[in-house]
Image: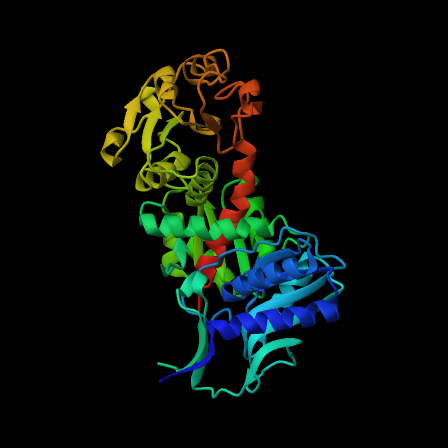
Length: 176
Length: 307
């Protein structure tokens, strides 16, 4: 069973709307960091929207949190480490951290640890496209969420983006 | 690809895919050493033992730094002060250290196969850091990584490995690595230091350094292991230098574009002249830098397989 939650058009609208809110609340002097893989794609899109709206060239990078995971022995053999690309100084910057889905909060914990290894940002705010509001395992909440929903533990939220999935939508499916 | 090995004993037993997987993983690790905080928590709480039965500065330091940048704890086992000098076998030594709950042994030994013997006796990961005349897999991996970084590929390149092929574990590992990844390997050196039948593993043999260099994209100069030349394989070091030493008088480095590699430590003025080592064609220090990333990748992949 597959339930469509957001269409391509709705994803676009959400990003645009939240971009306005981000500029209002964080100002234009910000940098965007996406969590690989789909968070990095969303970050790149948000950067482009922010660039247009602020007429600036906002810094944008991506991080791979594999090496910061807390489930070292649990994740099967040899996960692919794809590397991080943070080519700018993050000291004293306002960072918008971007991921596709917020679930247990452990990925965000890992991402914050990694960002802090690069320097001392002025603040980090969290953007997610989908916030699964139940099932949190750490005290982490998003500052900007495209959609908030309760999804059971036996289901997964799949964000499909045209850059890697060819389709563009958000669906809820049963775990196979 | 899924990595499933807990040991890295040589490149001979690895597939092309496995070698490429290590190189790809190492690429991500290289970035870690450029950060303000040069450390990731990937191996936090793991203990890695440098078990060196033969002297080494560079390899041991490189492994130690790689382990520390992955947040592992490192124990340097000093053989000269250990019970090995009291007659303990290497298996007993390894088992005793393992009884203290360690996760990985990095082994260097003058006897070929010593890391294999240890890996059969322990549950920890075992990484060969050079055994006798057999293999030195992480050296070859960092050489492959460096070549791929410079040329963007390995397949189709021509590499000339020059020097004492007979005693060289670096040469053997590089022959396996470069041939598996599709490069053409030529070995060159005095006939007395050329293993018989080496053509059978897919390399060409050449006894003239000029001829070997003329076709090469990569000139790989081996260290002349003075400690292994007691049997008079050649008349004198001066003669070795005249026939097989690389210098800028013999080769015009500006004419043909090739790179120079050396596993270190260099005998300047013997297998490589001082000015050649300093030329921009030289990748020697880039090799050393990449050694950290490659060893981080190897430690990360193997230690994860220990349960």
